[in-house]
Length: 608
Figure 1 (spheres, one colour):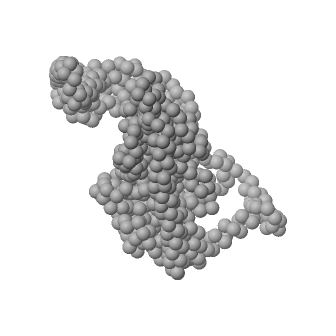
Figure 2 (cartoon, helix red, strand yellow; figure 1 turned 30 degrees about the vertical axis):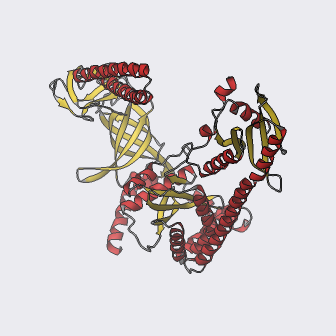
Figure 3 (tube, one colour; figure 1 turned 45 degrees about the horizontal axis):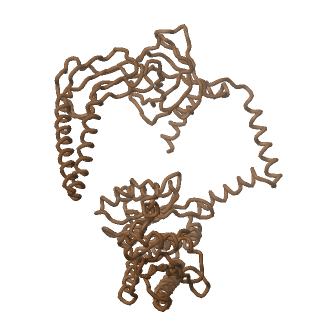
């Protein structure tokens, strides 16, 4: 009884839509008309490293568990076996006929097992002989599949060589790249194939099939580049839709592109050359088109064969100045690499002379207007459309973590909860009635409705819980006053309050655009506040933003600094002067910097 409860049937192992399973099931079914006394039967195939049942007849028969257990014990056997399973008072006996199907190299093809009820030895011999002759059909199917795979491999090799020859026939890199993506588009019968190059930590679209030019600012081009980045970040081939649900892949950009173009099939392939990332290929199919794993492997193999040729053409097409830059870089490698002692000695001599010229130095400090502000601010927003029931704080109040800030009116939500609770009770009552009537279809429908009601209840409870807005941490309410808006309507996402942490501040420096190039992350400085002029507070440059502000007709860049120590006297909005220690410079350079920059601008305006 235990074996019957835990035994896996073929319907549990293989999907019903499998063409291979249908063939084996039909093969077993034919034996019922030519072989009398069949109780049950099962066929095993080797899938991966496991032997799994793919088809059976009469799996509910009492002999099936014993036959399946016996077959699983003898799967490694290479000889046919006959084993008695059971017998009855009428002298009829049930025998298990086990027959392994092997090819000429003794490689496993299939394993068939029959449970046959016979009354004589002649019937048993006849049944075994019939099975021995009928397994030739399985062997024929296996050989046809092997021949088909061999022909497909030969066709793929021919395709790779043909595409490589066509790419080699092109003169320039651009023409060869367009030829590659166009050939791939024709080969896979898809709408578009894109080739991108990976530089500066992001992908750039270079070529599209059937198109020599395209706008680099097109939304579709940006989306293709995002798909390439998503593929390269994970370093794996990504197919949308993906039939393998066990693959843990991030496909946000792929899904977006597919949905924007009518649920098309998308395949992205990362490209590598000599251990380095070169770029990616993106293949856009037709609506509802599903890319298979063999197709992705074929695309990847074609790209790996053609890629070295493309790179060679790209290097040959470089303009003279790029070749000059590369040659200069090569000379620098010789200068700082092994050998070439003469060059190194000349360089060291020039370096020593420059050092002797820089004898008198001083620390150069950059001054800028500074202001203290909160390091972060947490926005408190409306969790859903509703009404404000109560506002417990306003701007300027100090709060501690989990303090209630705003209460939303949840009366409608509680009424909705009662509605769903009533619906749940109704479904439970109907389910009990269906159980008593043994109406399985209605039970399944009620189970689905019950899950839907439970989900609605969870949603309502979550909204009620989120209706009480709490302080995320100890801090200060810096903006927002809802005391004059009690009972007013708000929509989801409306800003209600802003809370800043109590002891978390940063410095905002306004640096002249002519001095922004001197700043680097990690530089140290000192802050002097107008309210506390007797004390200096050390800080470190933490962020240089590209944001500018105009003040008194001049442009200033916003630079942020992190204080080394905090004071209880700090308040957001305090202003002062920040001095950042840049480096040690010649006094001559420090004193004449403004004059030197003015002269440079004048000379540029005269001669530029």
